[in-house]
Image 1 (cartoon, rainbow, N blue to C red):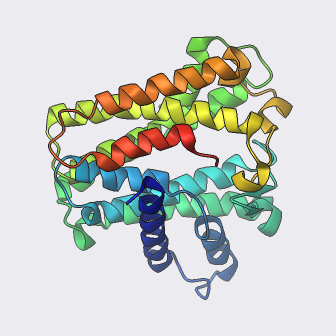
Image 2: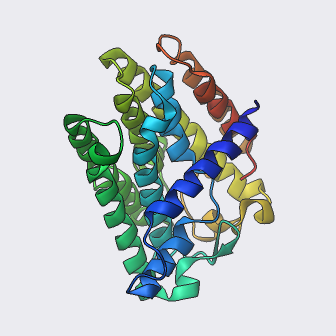
Length: 296
């Protein structure tokens, strides 16, 4: 199996599971449930969910055991994109090849949709011991880890810094901090949370933290590169948005060639950090390499 085949198989699996756990559009109030499904289903790489399941496997666990956790991560990611696309933030019209939530349902509803997806994710995490082989103490640890990763010390904090620094000159440390929080924090908790479910030892969790730091950085660098040289039709969203909004990016600070070299070094470090894990690390290794090759 190639990594592309693996990604397609797991994405389809996750899509089917998300369809089952999200509220039906026929449930009242209809419009918010319809909009939640519109924003969460029908596209996306499902990367964070796949990382969680692959991390579980990498420490000797079963991928299916981390599925419930993976679904919560996808809801959180979808909520962050809905809010990120709003006119007050990045003001994007397209996401995953279709109109963004606020363009279809209006800005006020898009705010509520993001809130609803986040709340649904918390419900999903609370239900883990009931529907998945996750103990109550582990579920509690996961809830704490996730809320810390997406709060003001994580994803939201990174978004705040991104807004504050928009249109301003930033240095290397400031740029890394923005992306470590905005993008890297959710990626990190995807990996460590999946590993917790798989029964990871302390040293294995530490190895996956190192993997996540380098993976998150490589992913963000390639994301910045694609905004400069990517194909808008393949990406499913407009390119050049970072430059238009004067966002701090790696190509803007280092240039394209050095940015590509930085991403490659990060991927090499990713693979090196997996050497001492007890399970099957093939998926994580190939996912790290895939970051350099992706076109969306």
